[in-house]
Length: 72
Image (spheres, rainbow, N blue to C red):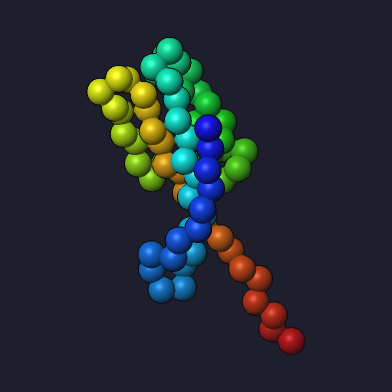
């Protein structure tokens, strides 16, 4: 399950966030491979990981939103 939203934590920088949840049935290596693939293909970086008492991994990914500025 993924859910993307936007937040502007700093001045002039906007981030897009994506929340991904992995059940405990996914081995650590598989989760790592999936996250690396998303990072390489989509420009995402790891923001935080939480592992729940039931073994569910809740991962938050982020990437910068680059806005084009007109110069002319």
